[in-house]
Amino acid sequence: MTALQYISAARESHSVHNIEAMTLLVLYNLRAPSNSGIWYMIGLAMRTCVDLGLHRETYYSGVTPYEGQLRRRLFWTVYFLERVIAVSLGRPYSIADRDIDATLPLEIDDTVRNDNLIARTLAVSPSPTFQASRPSSNITLGVQCIRLKRLESHIQGTIYRVDRPIASLVSKISPTLRLLEDWHRALPPSSPYESDYLDMHYYKAVRLLLQPFLTILAPTDHRIALCLQASGHICQIFKRLHQRDSYGHSFIALHSVFIAGITMCYCLFISPTLWTTTVSNDLRACSSALFVMAERTPVVKKYRDALETVISATMDFISRVPASTPAALSMHQAIPRAHQHRGPQPYTRTPSDSAETPSVGIGGETTASSPGRWEGRQGELGQMDAEWLLSFCEGEKFNLQMLDEMMKFEPSLGA
Image 1 (cartoon, helix red, strand yellow):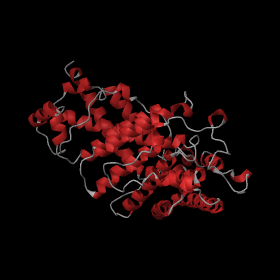
Image 2: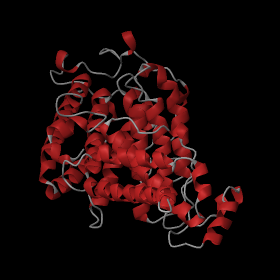
Image 3: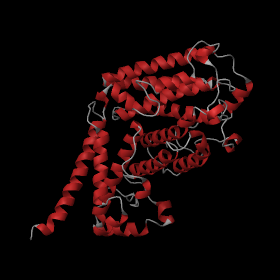
Image 4: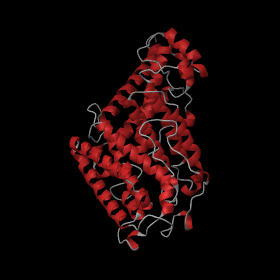
């Protein structure tokens, strides 16, 4: 009977250690070309967190301030990883955000272990004065990424849903884009590496928001240009990151670069007047990043080669498009390219942003005769068009939104 009174604590300690072990295994397998089932593993880690109650704020009243911070960091790390993996694979989350009320960990160095100091910081942390003057710590980068993942989770639940047609969700774009911009503007000063890392996640979130609407937006809609620009930034940042010896690679990185490149090509098929030398440089950066990945992991070569094929077809398509009209050019020039690093305005809206209803054809789809959209295979160009490219990306081997089909094509990439 004496031993039984400690069984609850022993089980809890064992479970926390299990979560830590599974999280480390997921981090390892993200960078290892092995069929390790990371989606199942990170899902099990999250369910164990939920079983312990780490997702509820009431849990932390029963542990010391320092232990509470450790477990908050553990839970939100699992949350971050599951969101990243689930979005990449196009699969649902283990827990909805509405079921989580645990607050984020304090932005204090992880070397701080004094319970009294942590408790005092917890007491003043809700203060706006503290929030405005808080110094950066060695976990600030992680906390900022978690905040962005919560916004991405909102995008996933609001936009990527099967019970509403995508055309009925266009009104969600502007308010969600404002939330992303607010997050971006509020970032504290950081090193160039951290800036690149945060910007990469920011532009991935912008692309995630806009990509589902590409099939219904009119070719002159400036949000197509925004998606093109965000995808280009992703490619440029990955190119810079891979030029640093300290940056590793993973199937998430492969997915991010490949999908960014495919999205750029799709935007150009929809609206070829968006082609500029800057876009050309972004596509070259995408190819460069994939070439670096292929040198380190041979199985990446087939995706690199596939993207090169799509890029070549895109270039051929653009070369056959009639000369750009002044109206189309002025539309593109009205949307300046976002800076490589953070600033007060990541994107500049145009007056058309207030018009929330896209120009669509019958049944909510943009028609082949819409202004600026070329008929492609069935028309005068005699080559593939935007709809064909989308079907190619969503076909047997490749998917525009997720890596699941790529996994079936090459299981050694993970999941």
